[in-house]
Image 1 (cartoon, helix red, strand yellow):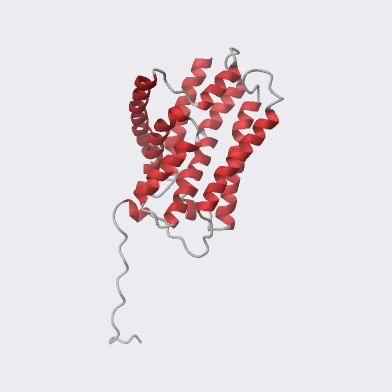
Image 2 (cartoon, helix red, strand yellow):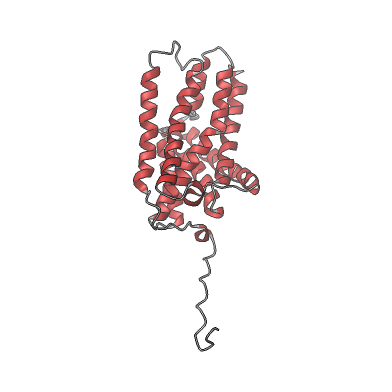
Length: 256
């Protein structure tokens, strides 16, 4: 029988309104951190260098021939993704609980909104870049594809590259930047608006495309807002896939 003389239990705290309410909660079982976030970038760069060296004497044209181009793009991303999956399970509670790797059907619509906002922002920055440098910056993957085509037109391997850029690339890059990097900064206690800024800066810097850095930063902000307002990677992955898919579609049309 309950003792009526005991005071009632204190009310549970109400989560704060706004973006901070979507912050994940990390307990003592989560031991990954910023070191692992940096390691994910190191794995990507080291693998890219090793793959590039391995293919150096294989290709015959100015670009990567045949299947080598999609392989060169896919191998570093697959290893990077496997590393993140491993540490999330081995040093944490999995991709969904620790890195917000989840989605809802509504994320497709929100992703479309984020894509449009990001493209408008990037378009404004791009127009300024054209005025400043008198030339439009080109994406590195587009340059690789054009060199690979080398006047030969559209091939099945370029179509495969476009599919990878619209599927594998968005998933892995979002797991890296809006997933592991975001969660590591959040776990360290950083405020959400600073996390949005820093992850967008790292996202822009890691592409190593100085002329497009400002454009990529703006797109990174748009993608980061997806996690900020929902607490999920679904909207960012959807928007990223739409952005890459649209760009690759125009590229394929140009090369055909």
